[in-house]
Image (cartoon, rainbow, N blue to C red):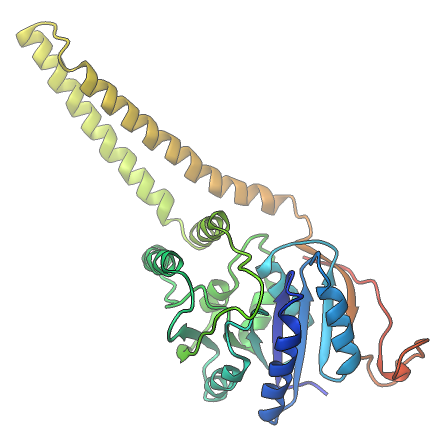
Length: 337
């Protein structure tokens, strides 16, 4: 039967925190008293995460599905793979580190049932370092001004989506994307709720400073042309100012004769203009790079194996399984486009 609720959880090197996640997550979902499934997507973990997920599947094959990538493709590609595999009418994304308590899922489900098709979450008190919190808030404001996507807390992965939004997201074939922003563009009635936030149960954040910068570059260049337009206007303004400066210097030379006192000022202006030009080349390269990645049409991710309970009538014996008729053997799957 098609469940009402699907939980999509990307997993990357979360060996230490998975047992605690399993204990709290299944208990919280059972308390909701609705049909649900949990789709774990292992994003090429190098620790024992895949083994723990397989063991959890054997414990609860009725509500557990495990998608195993053949390599590391990133958090958002893992979420997209989960969306492709999930069957629920309500989709909830959740990180595996327990910073978002599973007990908060019910708040988002209630908003979807009330008629919203996108429910974001705002952390009441962030359990992050001060620099990470300030940097996130600054990027949130900049991103909102540039893309017109109003997501208060873009770094929080606890979000819920209606089936109509997910169907549209699944039709997209973007190589690089930011899933919450992409879903927001398709939502008709978005809203947000305040949720609790906890410290990581184990391990460390997978996002370095460089990763956060790259993520925000992808977000800005993937959803708006405003950076290019702003740089074009800046170029026109600097061209006009440079023309006026040339006229001033030419007039001074004709009236006062040759002079060397302004040489360092000219060098400073030259270096400034060179910096602007290099920044513009880099900005243009971001857009060209996205085009280059898109036109290659390579798979966004490759699914090696999916562990799932077979449909009725398709059951087969699996040697050595505790419940042989309810566990699907490892199965090679295709690629994500």
